[in-house]
Length: 348
Ligand SMILES: Cc1ncc(COP(=O)(O)O)c(C=O)c1O
Image (cartoon, rainbow, N blue to C red; front, side, top):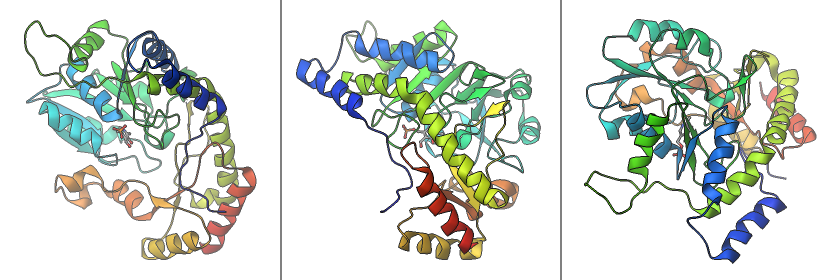
């Protein structure tokens, strides 16, 4: 049996919920999406959220809500999906890229401190691959923080859910994420004015005075799926942690993932092992031959899009060259995880 790199968990209740919306013929409007918004906010430890149609839209609206624009500097890690750069480009803010810590996947605090200037308007803390950023020292820098919780919805920091530590939180609900609505996203914030500004350009409608709008709304199909998926998030996370425990036991010394921690409770969106760069393609191909889909986890780090030299981002480059991402998702059985671990182990 072929083992995919990632797979959404779609169950009978998800199908029933989406089918009910189709039967109702009420594809937009009504109480469903607002209900999903409240549930999504709770999952982030907050009260209010906006549902949108992608994580990229959530990031864009977060920047608008936080009044980040032309001339502002935003600090973010290079080792992330290019959508963060896309959102900054739309508002005209300048990306200031930092490396990751020598261990794990989080942005380097020392590097962030070195890049702070009077123009720094925001730091984007990406809880990369489910690893929770050490938020306390980051927030203590006194610059607003946007948490990107796309890989860590439901994970906790010091016992509290991630999403509520910064000025805003953005989440992608794309098909590969921890829960999914197909395409979709959420922006949450403890600040009413942040959400109000974001809402004012999300919703396209009859305008009093013209300003650009983006019609980023979610339909009831996604809202219904989001609600059923959210109810199952604790179970999904428990399954991911069980798979990760198998990998940690079997592949611990080859792992890029930090060991499990109570303070920064991992969501295990991804599990990466260290593979010699010279053998990366061969090992990936051999796993594929055995029906195991393993991947390079970030297509290109952002600094390469901006033509910055690799030597300034040594830890990012190590993850890019040597990090092989293994299958991990709630429906992956322990026996399958053991089979994958054994295959990887024998190749290493
Ligand atoms: C950390 C992170 N943030 C944001 C996004 C963008 O989300 P979307 O694909 O839903 O626009 C992604 C996409 O993979 C991501 O990995």
